[in-house]
Length: 311
Image (cartoon, rainbow, N blue to C red):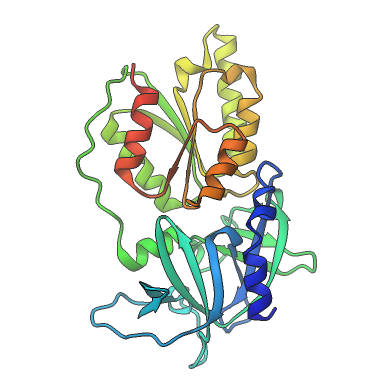
């Protein structure tokens, strides 16, 4: 794929928006100068181009090459190979992907971009069984038709490794009953930890799952148990918080399943995603989410959840 072709494909927002609820995603494949294939959700990539001049600055974290000026904005540039501890040849990183997620814009240096593929989320698997030193930075694995594997990067973890995790400070507790519980699902270790911190500060009990399919299985079990006990599921789960991108079943399909099951009537669904564009908000609205909040702003998350869980 040449850079002009990749940019044109990345501009096809309307076509990708129609994927909402279809349990499909589009992945941009790229390499880091080794034989491994990596991928990132196309929705996170704003553009691809040749690496511009990078201004070196002192005291940059490991893997952060420096700063560039891009259309009037100064953004940091990260070299992905050092983060993944890959042994690459000098001079790699001539291509830059500009990624936009979690209200940040970053440049990622890569060796080359390949092509965009469309896959079913059912083919996107959690990496527990993958023996890799980089497992903590890989959120999912896809097996290609030819048998090769694509490693999907955990951009939240990369962001946390590079710049540290934001401190969560003044979040007052919510006025909730002691047995109020929230169910959340996210495939990122960093995201699950930060969500748990927010819920703990709100004084809310919580359960979680690590992918959409696991979440739907557990939620169905909770609903069945509530029915057997003659209870309303809302007595056990006051709110469901879902990520958008997850292995096996994405947050859009999970939301559609929840909203089409009458047992969950009255249980609000909030989508919490690093994909924070208006197009993604529209995708969430199209499947029935009650609120959409971008990662990761602890105060914004707490302010979104509080009126939905308070008595």
